Image (tube, rainbow, N blue to C red; front, top):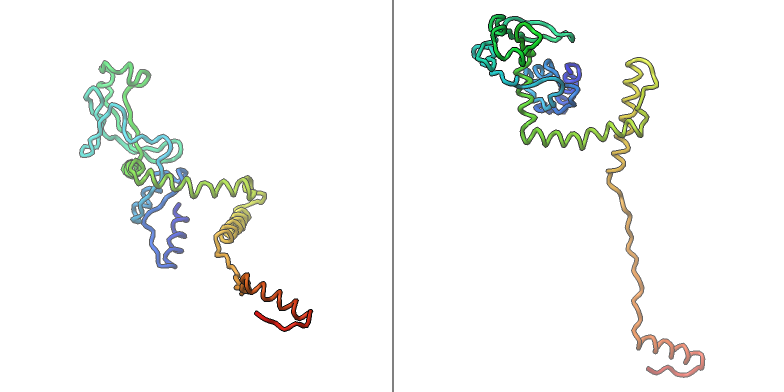
Length: 232
């Protein structure tokens, strides 16, 4: 995302345009991307995808104290930062060992653990704002717009332009293939919507003869053949 965003902003500045909203696929839904766009003043319309949940069922979060409260009323304060298997940073909230061991809800809450633990990504605030945006009417409309404009392009490139797989090696070859395919797709689209030039001509047709004129012409032709004087 950072490299793509930098190149996009440079091209927009060339045409004296600014980037205020960004609509992207759910594959770009991660904390660093949300935080990067917010830092640059860009509203991210990227659907939150994955295991993120804005709320922890049964637990109430106190933003001022930075702690959770369990259904039994016991606190789970913030303890430390840690990393997950993917290397992402998150915050750990731990309940006291004594509180969990004496809790009547332990059998249903944490039957195999010593104490309750909640892990939240350090980008939880950015995730939450993105999730709230996608629930709005505008977020739903933008999702439908993308499904009807962007997704069909990928389908055409895959099924009709041979991009189901890359027949080249390396990123440079793949980039060249994508570039040529995009040029072909855009040229075809341009030809479809270009203005059609129509040539028109006006032909003056002879005036149709009335019935009386037709009879006079026939008499004139017969009189000339008989060498008779012509009378109307």
